[in-house]
Image (cartoon, rainbow, N blue to C red):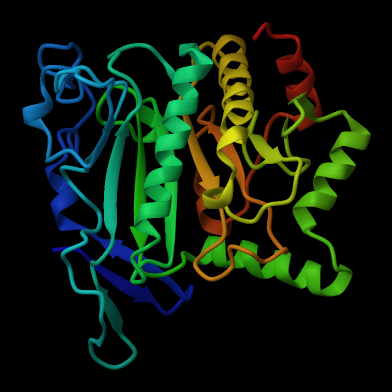
Length: 336
């Protein structure tokens, strides 16, 4: 059973999930250990034909009349969930100053294609669009549960990014609280809006488009850029060119241009940096702020090219060893 414990020193919540220890690679010594991660269609639970090896399917895209194994995108509950829909969502006192919440939430996996080894960057735009459409549909459905305050949509690629199964996939975790980092971003953006009447992120996009030094690519609906204060080398954001606070409200006809932009970003990172490990996350507003104007939803892609060490962990500050202007110039020269 998972619970969320309140950290008084940071005013944030920590998910304590003992069941996650059952993940195949959890806590094993990686030195001189043979990698036993499923690496073929024969033993991979995400591959077609192995559907019975996963929890009961939530959603899948299939052509009419297709068999259970003929799908293009598939959604299942995470076998080792951080949070579960069935758990308690009430708040409790646990002694003087200590508080916790039952581990209520949701944890889902989006298997992004039947292909065990084909990376998202190498998929056709149609398939990337299916994945984004599925992520949006699951986001919208989870947010109908009033117990959930936000849904984190993310993708881990590579061992150093946290991947435990090689078959390409995304994840969604719905939480009964808003994580402090997201709340802080919302507070900063709200204060800027209150002072100026403008969206902080829209102003930033306009400035970047005028500067052009950190722009990676753009189309009629989205821009990809490397932020002025990038936290890690080659950090890349994709932002809408038309104001919108919630990813859940993105119009269906704009999913394709988003897929096109995401493919460009991932393909240039893949080719330019020789398939780096990375984390991808969709930042969006929490419950109740979907129609407000202070925030602009966006996608962040964070390559794992360096490892946070003592200073970063001790201070909370980042050390970026590559100027984003130089990183953007390099990636613009990579064929996509």
